[in-house]
Length: 489
Image (tube, rainbow, N blue to C red):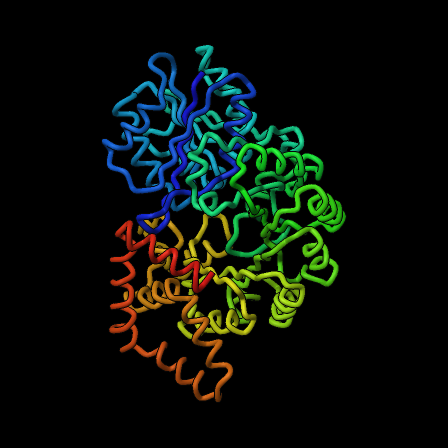
């Protein structure tokens, strides 16, 4: 049967064309392997009901049962609620299932949405195939592991989870289900990859610890695909998409296991030979790992700084990474001729403007080639979600991305500061890098200026309005994106 997957991929900017998500690619691949026909509705701009239903109608079969699956994160839940209602008005007999991190960690809340029929907890490859087979045969979803089903009588059937999948048994993810050549990275000749699942660390803002609890007793939550299969997938991507010149590995920590990574570095360097970027935790960046990265052809390493304030980073976020480890990790990469990319967050619960500026200053000190910053979002069942709840900071505000606004109950002054620092972070980092070469009073003066109330009410407010104007216009947004890549990486 034909199965339509819906991927809400709404980021800031009228020029946004979408991101390749391998999770949907693998779901499409297992469905096709089982004899079904997957289709994708990739939503990259906020749709009207008419446009959404027209796009969906073009993908649906003329006759037969309808199975429509959503992949959603917490900040996309309001769109699941709205769009599932649109679907049921046009196709009341459609089966709607929601999967992803939020349905896994908050299944009751997700299934409580009026037009959602099922939720998938955990890994969905086997469950989605079994569901498609059941619906095609006219059977109910009763008994399918990983699924919770809201029966017509209102009773919820809760089925247990199946063991975690061996990644080597999965087909390679589909890319052709997307408008692949026109996606964000692919337009620049880059292909994104995922060759592992899971992370062993316990950062308080991340859902990994909650997911480990969900998967307890079902297998190893941290898994890697074998190196020969990774190399084979890379070869296929290069063969099928000759415009690809570089790879980006989105795995939480690609060099997590040194034995696996030693094998990977040798095989990649000898058989693929294209530049690539990957994520690495700063405390794992030693001389051997950096040398292996260089050997393999890595041209960019992405580190999570998250906060430049030691107290915030190590006590609130539980990163347990010292300033010295951060400086050393960036230095080792620079010495090896590898570019560095820094991930950061602002708007954390209780975070002051000075603590946010500490993050800007640490980025300046490590001399990151590229800086990215997001606005903190409190994911359910994380430690920081509980902290926000205890502090009375949770709201019903809807924010579709991690760049536009904070969902926490901050007053307007603090919200303006968070939004401004997020948007102009690379420029601020360059200013602080310059100030660090000058007498110390220059940096103190910059701190005072950026912390002042009048600056927030005047400069920050005006700069944020200009930013909104640019990002809402497709042409201006494309120019802004090109300018940012040219001067800020």
